[in-house]
Amino acid sequence: MAALKNLVALVTGGSSGLGKATVERFIQLGSRVVIADLPSSKGADIARDLGKNAMFVPLDVVNENQVAAALQEVSAKFGRLDVCVNCAGIAVAYKTFNFNKGLAHKLEDFTKVMMVNAVGTFNVSRLAAGLIGKNEPDQDGGRGVIINTSSVAAFEGQIGQVAYSASKAAIAGMTLPMARDFSHRGIRVVAVAPGLFDTPLLRELPDKVRTFLASSIPFPPRLGKPEEFAKLIIAIVENPFINGEIVRIDGGLRMQP
Image 1 (cartoon, one colour):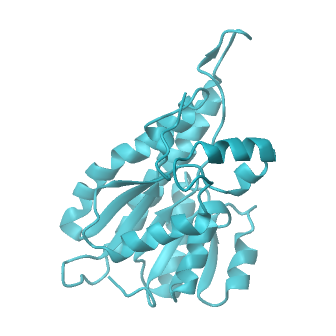
Image 2 (cartoon, helix red, strand yellow):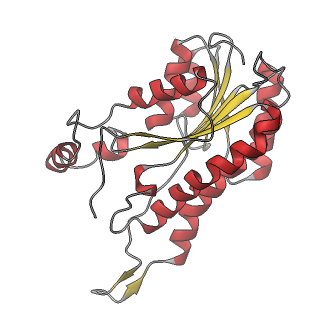
């Protein structure tokens, strides 16, 4: 696979949170980066600020035609794709059935979360693999890596997280079989399962709540920093023997109900 300085990486959800931190880390290391996000995102502004090594492709991860068109743009500009990092995702908070209100979880909300998180990740991965697979193999036969974002909620989902947990468990579940599917072509597949991170979503919470969440993390007793997530992504890219694995990054956190 190409050295980091010449590497081409595509990051979905790359205009905010963990995705944006990952984009910035790749740029710092001299990589060329494709920010893939919704047209309404700040992706175009971020790409412009990062300079000539960054480009923005507007897309919805569940739209097959938009993803395919975006990959054609990547190929036309950079001529290759080495890394695909799927960070795009959404969440809702509803119990399966709220007995106090007599209301069941809305099926459309469950479906939307599953579509964006699980189906969207699969859609981008399967199409990105076609471009990554065209690379010349390295000495091990490696051509690139796909890194998907699961969550600790895949293993310790909390009350009200049934949709989110199911979607992230699906991402964890597809890791090994997808890695096996691509093994003959030298494409690795790895999932990262982050815990509680200091993202824009959590920054909207009251300080008291943020402090409580941080105190639940054994060590270090604080929220994770997005750049720490990004550093793990780089470590996975650089280590060719990490494959078919789900890597937790959570400070030893095990979520309570």
